[in-house]
Structure formats: structure tokens, C-alpha cells
Image (cartoon, rainbow, N blue to C red; front, top):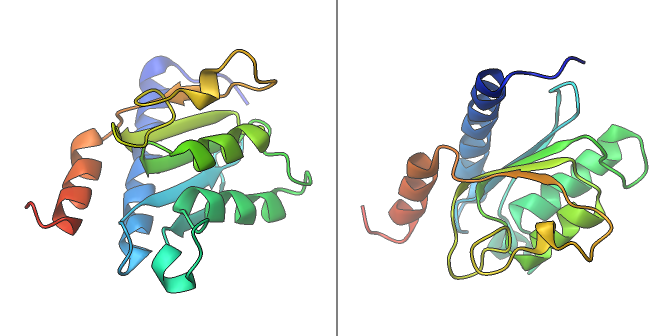
Length: 157
């Protein structure tokens, strides 16, 4: 696979983020967050929405569900080396840690989360130099669309 230019990468990430926004609509009564994992060739491995309420599971964040499904589909055990996690909201500590532990190659996210974000806002788990893996991060992609979805959930739109 050839390395895409900056403009090509941005277009690809925007297309992927639109898919994550689509996945977020499956959150039902939960916070509308969607996550999609793509393999190094850009093939979708998994898509998920937050399902904490539906599953009565505090770990049922969109990112964790998508990482689990992607690991099963990718065929390298639990490692998602070279894969990209695309999520509509900046991951929390649990989700950022799960992405690092899965050896995800990159994280693309939409809206920043100043209260619980762990990819640059409140903490920066994924870039901590003490960890043995640090994925590339692209934050704030289609931020307005992601934020609008969240504001709608909280009744501010």
C-alpha cells in the first residue's frame, strides 16, 4: 500500500468519520458515539455504537465493542497493528488504553471531550512516552457534525 498524501489522507479520514457518525445512530438511549475500525488497506473490520444502557455494561463503549469485533475479524489475535480506529468523540481513558493495548496504528476522532477525553484534552494516554506503543492521532475531524449529534442528545439543539 502506498502512503497517501496529506489531502488524500484527510479525504479518507473524512469518509471514515462519516461512517462512524452513521454508526453512532445505533446508540439507542445511550450517548450517540460511533466507532469504526479499518484495516491497513482501508477495509472496514467493525463498526459499533455505545451500548452501555442496552447491555447494562459499563465497558460497552463504541470503541471497545469495535476493537473486540475487529480483533476477531483481523486474524492477528488481539493485535490491530496498522489498523485505524475512527470515533466520533475523543476516547476516554478506558478506550484510549484499549486502543494502545490493541496496538492500533492510528486514532481519528471528531469532537473533543474536555471532561473525560484521554487523547489530548484532559489526559493524553496514547502519547505517553512511558508506554510501549503510541498510535498516530488525528483529532477534531468533522468536529462540528460530531458535536451537533451530542448536543442533540443532551437537548441543546
